[in-house]
Image (spheres, one colour):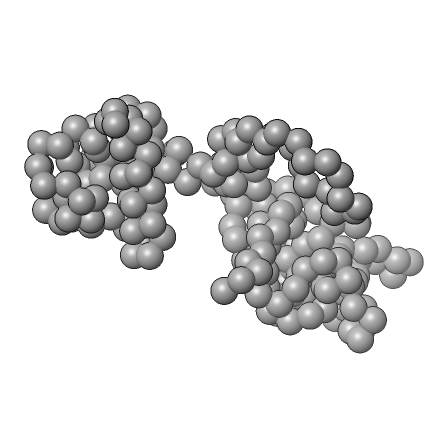
Length: 196
């Protein structure tokens, strides 16, 4: 088996380790984690993964994830949410979730959602919304707002009296700011984990 074929297996082990521990093992333990005895072989592997963009080194020489480390496969064909159709060949293409969800990294934050006031907009308790703090909010946008010194996630709306915050759950009332309404950011995406 060629080294490049084994590289995919080693990369998979590093990804699993990173997902579990939120970092890489020390260089001394790297061989143990990868199932490699030779430190020279570990060094060559890390350098190959660096050349391919999966790993990079920080200024002080510590190995960290490269841009492609979090790349996932994107099927060439979408899946129907309606009636089933004949299966088509699906060639996986590289896909970076961050690149898909985040247009402006320096002004984007991820905000965990609690509560059920936005369930009719498809946003549930436990979801994470992608919020661009640099976009100008317009009526109809979903926003994270500071209203009377409290944060909330709602739709920005406007009526005859001015801006209001509209929930997407009939059990909650419209929020009309008593003193101050400030937009923290505009919701541009959503992440949800179904199986925990």
